[in-house]
Length: 292
Image (tube, rainbow, N blue to C red; front, side, top):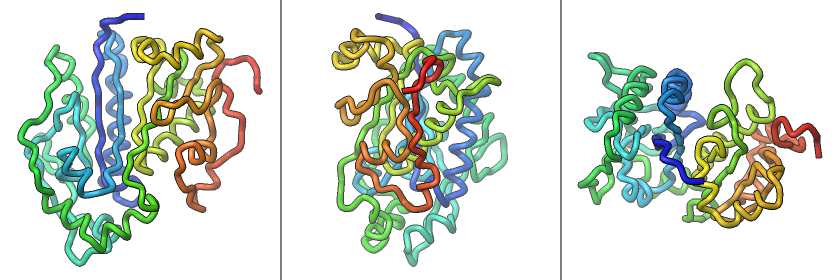
């Protein structure tokens, strides 16, 4: 199952995907950019991995080199190293801080934007396909930036982290999908509603601070081969796909769990406003030909 298929890793780091327009709009533009360049990448045989990282503490921000929200990195490199910022009302209110909290302003082609422009993201992805080695940023500061200090002040941190119930460990959810036409299966004109709902639920999971990695058998067979537990499940039958693992432990096979089950498996609290998304449908894998 070895492959030399090139892989581009895109990370979106953010403080909030619920009330901050800058984070939400950048997230939407990232999806649009990936969809816009998808066919071009497929011709080159390039796979795109997207990771959304909810930063929930000042310590985590320092460890990640996260200075301003939101941040997009392509193969480890910020798509705009020389960042600018301005006051963000939503994040200031979220932090419950007397000091104004700044969020990123994106400068592209002579103009400032409150969300990363689609063309800017596409340009960064294209540059990453030119056989450039992965670039890790060196010399990351050991102290938090001013926006992070303001957001994660002692009083604001308690207000912001109530949903974490004191947990400091970041959970990781891995999804091993059957072979699909694209990383999420949500493309073309005949979109499977189960896949569309699951993609939305994964975004919700990421907004709760969970690291999500998704692997498509048709594009990343090496990720499957590298996991003995996943290989064992597949040897028992390909109908075991999709496979979900939390912190390396398999928690689900053969179905896309609804949001309420994802929350339970991850130990994430489900807010009352999210419960209308928490359907109890079976979530059977697409094109399985059967249901439960």
